[in-house]
Amino acid sequence: MSDKRDNLLLLILADLRRNFFVLLLGFAILISAFYNIYITHETRELITKKEQLSQQKDNLMIEKRNLLIEEHTLDEHSRIRYIARKKLSMSQPTKKNSVLVELP
Image (cartoon, rainbow, N blue to C red; front, top):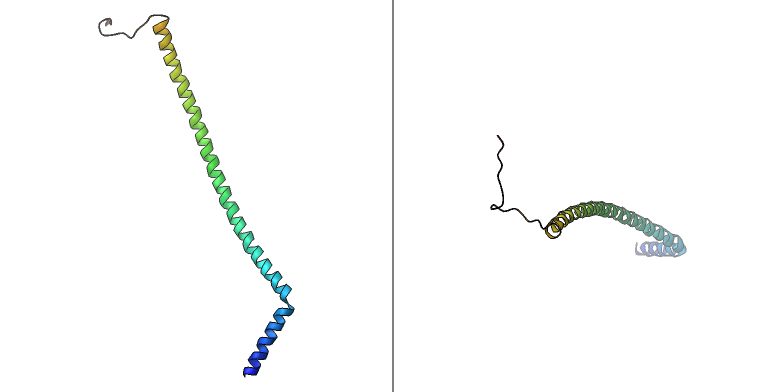
């Protein structure tokens, strides 16, 4: 029985030696297939991340435009207030110099 096992083991090893390149090619194909799956998964994750970042960029651009419009609006009021005070010598009315007009 031991002779048959030894012979079988020797036959298997001899067969593996004869078909070493086929076996190596099979492992290479298997590794290549798993690597392809991994790269596809990574690519899909990166595409999803890119889309999220693109959406975030669009939101930030909209917010920037809104802030610029708000800044421009606030600049206009301060500019008008500055011109009214300096060039026209105007001031904010107080209770003393305010007059209440009632309509009949």
